[in-house]
Image (cartoon, rainbow, N blue to C red):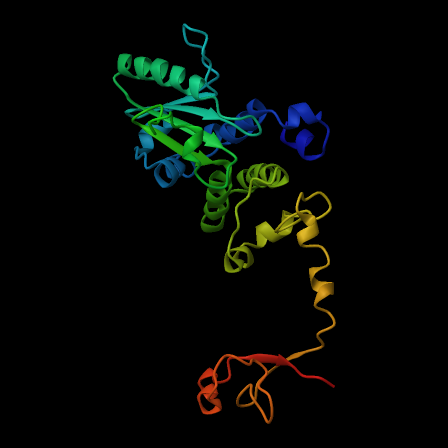
Length: 271
């Protein structure tokens, strides 16, 4: 399914399916080295700390159905925890659904003597509490956690840079990251981080955005050409004020004080 979606062989409806995205991402955590990926992901992103034995015995329940027919996307039972994940991609958050999942998940976790956590996974770049809170500012669960898909990709990138993985795992990882990157589910990484990762540069087709399809492409296209008439910028030799009228009138009436600007101002040298 990874390759079919990467190569554009699926319909737009299937490509935008939250169920397919959830399956692709969390199948990786289920089948890849759990100590390396699942255990670290839980600790780094959810503050859930479990043992090596716990992650090896972890259960992945995709789309379980409760007695009232409520169907969360995923439940992970690991160690002492019962983690219910409700994943969103393009569709809005349904708070009523979260409340039902909170009630059912809490009940199941209590029966299993587990600690319950309700996890909302969205494509938002930042936490938007109004999506989850009621009119009084209450969250659907006392053990509520929000994360986004971008955090998952960032975690994968950092993990792959730090570890010497087998070729099979690395190929699996690269396909998954290419899939997420194709959905624009990547967060900004500092340039040093990008340059450190040769593998990232090998398979990323774009680092920032696809200007052909970007919604705000008009704000970016032509930016370099707009500045092209400036042949070069040079530092001011001493001060930005010479004989006659100062370049910036109003900064000071006393020319002797203008030297405080030092050599930090720049100007365009005319031919």
